[in-house]
Amino acid sequence: QVQLVESGGGLVQAGGSLRLSCAASGSIFVINAMGWYRQAPGKQRELVAGITSGGTSTYADSVKGRFTISRDNAKNTVYLQMNSLKPEDTAVYYCRAGRFLATGYWGQGTQVTVSS
Image (cartoon, rainbow, N blue to C red; front, side):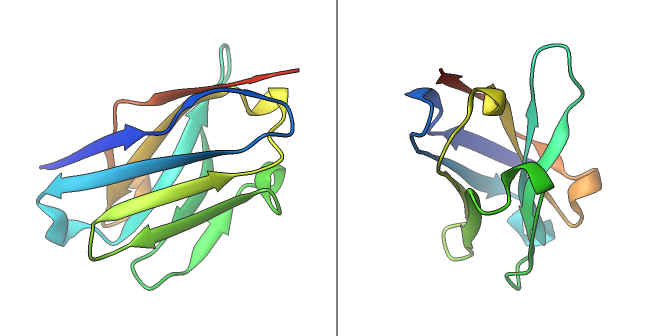
């Protein structure tokens, strides 16, 4: 089992920035990929960004150039730096981690609200 604890969500004005953190504990030896998903009201959960233990990252087109994912393997923590936030970025953001993102463990989610 892997436990994921997210922090850093909140309310911010459009154009502002937030940094999300997600710390993993438990059976961390199974973790290769870490990443962030989000789910807005009435919409499906979508991948925002992912990163492997080797540092290879991927981003949704909608956040490229604005969001940056990084990780500290020594701290078993993944970060999401979100800049130039838009109202459409409003969602619950979920951390996910595992050998593969598609089958990884989920965090409890953190709310990000961007006001116009």
